[in-house]
Length: 55
Image 1 (spheres, rainbow, N blue to C red):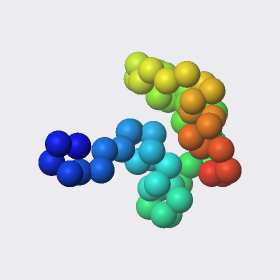
Image 2 (image 1 turned 90 degrees about the vertical axis):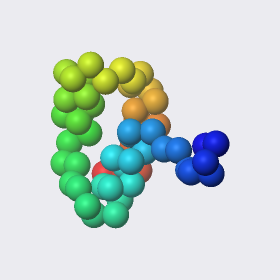
Image 3 (image 1 turned 120 degrees about the vertical axis):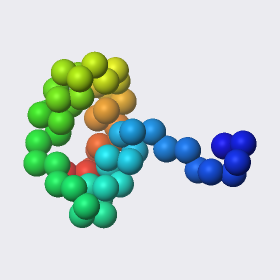
């Protein structure tokens, strides 16, 4: 931010890649579980809000 860069979180980047057609997310439940399995910490409510209307 100090350098004038736009900072995005990991989930925002994943969402943007999906929307732009760069990656495909077939199952949000599976994505959420995979993130939890690699110790990515995010509340389910936040995850759902980020990926709302993204299927």
